[in-house]
Image (cartoon, rainbow, N blue to C red; front, side, top):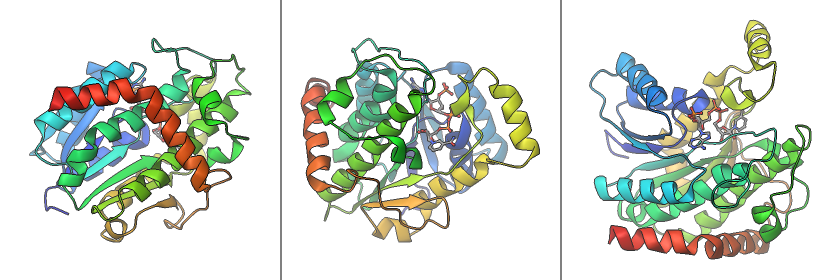
Length: 296
Ligand SMILES: NC(=O)c1ccc[n+]([C@@H]2O[C@H](COP(=O)([O-])OP(=O)(O)OC[C@H]3O[C@@H](n4cnc5c(N)ncnc54)[C@H](OP(=O)(O)O)[C@@H]3O)[C@@H](O)[C@H]2O)c1
C-alpha cells in the first residue's frame, strides 16, 4: 500500500462511511468520495479538513438510484485518477416502503447491490492496473434474514412491502453484496486485487432514518451507549489499511475482531454466486460496456 493511498468510498456523507472516511484521511489517504447532496458533501469535506487540513479530497456527485449516474461517476473517477488503492462500496439504505427507480428496479436493490456492482466493474481495470489494491464491500449479518434467493426474480422484483417485510428485502440485498464480493474475489485471483466484505455490526446511523421515532430512538441508544458507529467504521478502516487484509481475498469479516464469517445459504454456493453474477451482468451490460467505451 502506498504511503498516501488513493481511496474511493461511497456513502461518505453519513454514518459509518463518514467516520471511516475521516479516519482514512487522518491516516494520510487521498480521498475520493461520492455524494448525492452538495451540503452533505461540504460537511464531510469540513470534517476531514478538521483532522487532516492538508488532505487531498475529490468529490463526485451521483444519486445511486440512477444507474446512468453510477456509470457516469465511475467513468469520471476512472478518467481522473491514475490509480486506486482501495475501493470501498459502503453507500446503502434500508427503505421501509417500496420505491421504484427510474430504471425500474426496487430502490434498495439498485442502491445497495446494482450500484456497487456497476461501479466496481467500471473501475475493475483501474484496480487491476493499480495492484496491489483492494475492494471492500459493506455487507451485513442482516443477510441471514433474506430467505431463499432466486437471482433474476429478486433483482427484478418490484413487489410492494411493509415496514416489517422490508427487513427481508434489505437482508437479501446484503446477501447479494456478499455473493458479489466472493465471486469477484475468485475472478480477480492472481491479479493482486484483494476483495473482501464485512459486517459492521449494529450502528446508530442514518440507516434507520425512515423510522418515525428514529430521532428519539437514537437519543436513547446513545444514552445507553449502544451502537456506537465508531465501531462499525473501524472494521472498514481495518480492511482498507491492515496489511493482513491486502493478502487475504474472498473473506467475509465480522466487526468482532475481524473474525471470518460463513455466509448464510446460498451465499457460500459457488453456482448461486455465478448465477447472480451472470444475471446482473446481463441486466447491466449496456451501462457497463457503454461506460468502458466512453473511458477508452
Ligand atoms: N447501521 C448499521 O447498523 C448497519 C449494519 C450493517 C450494515 N450496514 C451498512 O453500512 C452501510 C452504511 O450505512 P450507515 O449505517 O452508515 O447508514 P447512513 O448513515 O444512512 O449512511 C448511508 C450512506 O449511503 C448514502 N446513500 C444512501 N442512498 C443513496 C443514494 N441513493 N445515492 C447515493 N448515496 C446514497 C447516504 O447518502 P446521504 O448522506 O446523502 O443520505 C449515506 O452517505 C450501508 O451499506 C448499510 O447497509 C449498516
